Length: 242
Image (cartoon, rainbow, N blue to C red; front, side):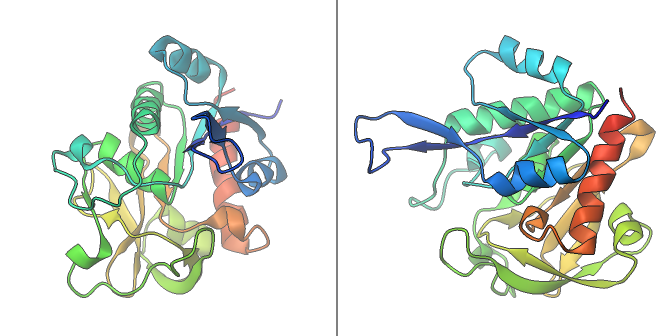
């Protein structure tokens, strides 16, 4: 039986088509298409209120995919918000951080993409730079338009899971983000960096854990060998729990 992969959802409100304050859970189709194409059954996880419901989600899925999206509230890592224009959804932060922590406790494989790797790092004890400008020497990591990605090379570090999957030291990836990882969560290994030194991937595989996060968007390049390999590796790990 194929593994069930829970996929976190973004939140949207004040849609111009619907101006009565209603909120929407949504996700790019590329996320669930990549899961399905690589052997998993995608299940969308809405941003519900009750923790009991979130625990029920986790009891039924075999792996957790935390998707991209808005900024993580700096209060989660002990800082004040220095950017008034930040897009923050407190409920989404609360849901995803809860899911990430409880999934780890249950030894569920967790895979984070873009915002997802930032959520993982914060949930497990790390922190973020609230903006690229706060890290000296940082280059461009976004185009400036929603859902348009900047292609750039990253360096894969030896003796990591990403290195095993990539089979080479330099790979081309696509990203769009203004927040970046700062202090890395305890016990995690940095497995890829941009050429300016920005952390692009972290992982932890101790004692049967499967915790992997990338700052880029492999779901958008499904025909790329590394992108497919990452999804297959995650879904294979989830299938082994069944």
